[in-house]
Length: 278
Image 1: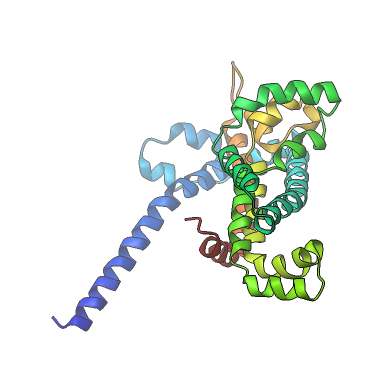
Image 2: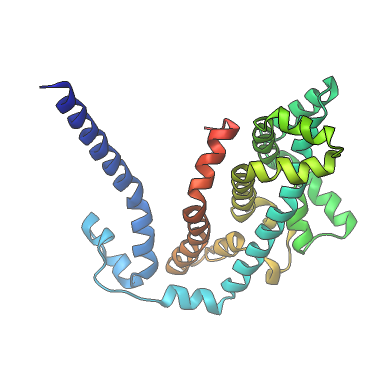
């Protein structure tokens, strides 16, 4: 076998392995879609793997029950909190990242180490004291209570700092010689050259807020203001459970970030290549 034929066989083998791996990862997603649309009576009578993955009938009762229970309102609250977190978090994270790049002192290195340690620290360790603080300030049961703790995301700061470090120093010095201050350099130089990292950090902020469960559960006591993830948990009670409705709601919950990922995947790949995150 020639070297060219060997490379072709190796490429086909890797392609087949990648396709098989993709199918393995798609099985749970397909099972979720089937469970959301399948008739509940059929789910109880399934006796084989084939019956579980290939439904014989379809039903929209789970989605109807979700709408009747106000799940769309919960999705709207989660979406508003996620968008607010992305907007405010990008402002905070980009300014912090620029500060670590533009002002390089021993203190800045120590502060950056604290930032790195912050996203390694589980949020659960801070959630209970934060509940007391927000309650004393009268900020519970609302969007500010959901958004404010998520603005300072250490991973987003790290991602943007790594991207800002890749901005040519010569360009920054040229703007400095032209009389540009920090704000002008930040707005006209660093941000335009770091768009992939901004999109990547935005996705980090969005997903962290969208998937949040413990904090909304602790800080939101009004049932009309619960988020989508908390609303899903209400389908399971001590005496009965509406599993089809829960599957339908979970399907809606994962579709929205999946759509965002589909439209931003190229930017996310570019962001990972410039920030050093793998």
